[in-house]
Amino acid sequence: MGLEEKLPSGILLTTVEKVAGYARKSSVWPATFGLACCAIELMSTGGPRHDLARFGMERASNTPRQADLMIVAGRVSQKMAPVLRQIYDQMADPKWVISMGVCASSGGMFNNYAIVQGVDHIVPVDIYLPGCPPRPEMLLDSIVKLHDKIQNMKLGANREAEIEELEQARLRRLPLVVQVGGHRPAGDGTP
Image (cartoon, rainbow, N blue to C red):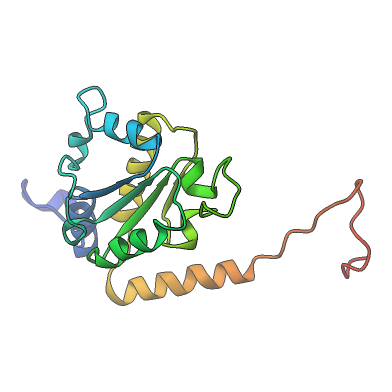
């Protein structure tokens, strides 16, 4: 016998955070940044077979000022890194980034001076999407996970408290101890 049962039909109970989260997740406009073969998979995600429009993302923005989400698809060269950062800086807040493919996430097989070894050196990344190239279904899955993250995001002062709490939790984590041959390394402070 809760409050919901005493209210007449047609009354909806929720919080402003939940309404704002639902509105944000339902209207994410991507700024595509296709640099290599992953961009082909990104383009096929917008096609009729996978239909990116069912997530409210049918409008790929031609200007970063109207975009919420940057999808970095492919390897990022050192020459392209400042352009990528400039486009990210021109996007309005709140903004999110998906790193699509192993080349964007970690440099991939291109371990040389010309390729940035991970786009997270340039912009903060929310979702890493592995694969070479990742399938459109994988991109859709990462978009759904990002939508869940957006919908559950706190607002205002609660957002600052959530960020502080996550940072403190990361700092409290113990560093990993590497075991060599089944034994802990000497001098690590444990008996």
